[in-house]
Length: 157
Image (cartoon, rainbow, N blue to C red; front, side, top):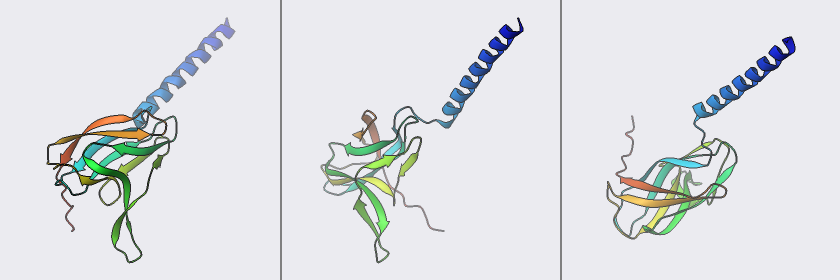
């Protein structure tokens, strides 16, 4: 009789631990697949260049890589990063695919990593939306409707 009680108690303890672990994963909001959020594109005129910004969140199960981004609004689309050159000036350079670790958050933001839309085919005005496809090495591609916004530079104090 006592061995049955210990057995049931052991099962209940294991079940409790499994439920606790599941709740902890949900608390951290780490997605099953690599995902994007808070996407926006800076407004710009046809023939000009602009950028796409967003947050990239790694899968909770595996490392992944953002391989490319597709959209019909520009002649060329590249993954870029803003860096300081030897003279101290801020310049953009193409960096290619971006690896993302399990659960890692990678910010694509002004003056950092971003997706460069080179030679826009038409005006992108505030309020417009653009269909953008994010392509990954392991996760399925994600298609998002991304809103165009004006970019306001933060005021210096």
